[in-house]
Length: 186
Image (cartoon, rainbow, N blue to C red; front, side, top):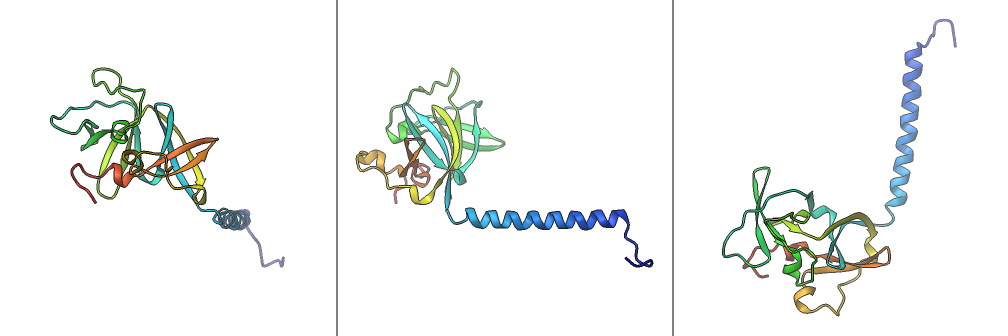
């Protein structure tokens, strides 16, 4: 360094910090490229009776554990009622009844309500009641298989695929079909 050049301590720290940040950015970019080779699907697991299901995480808005339901008359048996979510009135769907699968939880509006997952599709949002909320998992997209052919027709239309997670077969719910407005058919 020549006598006319002098670097302040602050400038030195700034250049060191910039170098550290540059190296971190390069490291993160490399890690992203390495993990980007495997396309992953995020799933939120939930239980109905003894069976486990999942919804794609991009369709999940939030999870509700405490809420109150207002019954509405003359709706299909799988519509429990409606709830108010920060000013938005939304239906509450008993997904087990809709999919015709056994559930441990009887939806009783006078007692403690089961957990609900607020899900959304392009056309609709609803709170689906489930027996238990599980984990959020990432699975390789290529490990998702078509729905089992052993499902009866009334159940298979609500299942988009299946995947093994921790040695359990998980049915992935077809949110577009499950959230299809009542009375509409494709």
